[in-house]
Length: 211
Image (cartoon, rainbow, N blue to C red; front, side, top):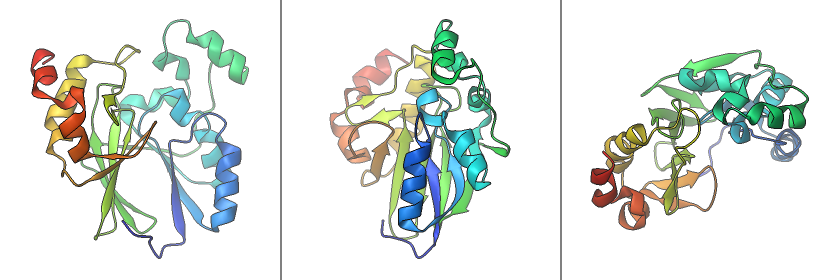
């Protein structure tokens, strides 16, 4: 996917201690942020969402099932996580961004010269989504913590579900184009074709055993 002519940009998964880096990148690029997009609500993906969104006066987009994690991050980490959040931020809760908007499966939005399509893929969290961005010529997929190079997201935290994850992999991920580039929330870039061929969690043996 080539560069667009838009002077806008979007900020995806603005996690812990991201605000300063975001400011530096925005100033360097000269682009205008228009939205914060969250693939899911875990702390390492949304901790600075309120700080960044409110600083630029832009909305945060997140699936309704994960919205509560914006202000109550411990709910997505386990029963003892409140103390951890308090040690990091001085409180078990975080301010909710001034402008929060909820998206749902198959929604699409136009930002920064790109069309962004939302694919709801619960399993890692109930509100996890894939973001498919295209400029009409090329496209890429932001997979959050659902699909990694050679692996998938964990399912042992509150809201995680093996049943939901297997359904998401079988019904959504495996149906994507093989040549689609994938940028995971952690780790290296990959593609749907590579993962369908080499990722053990996308093989029939795993999907059938855990369905």
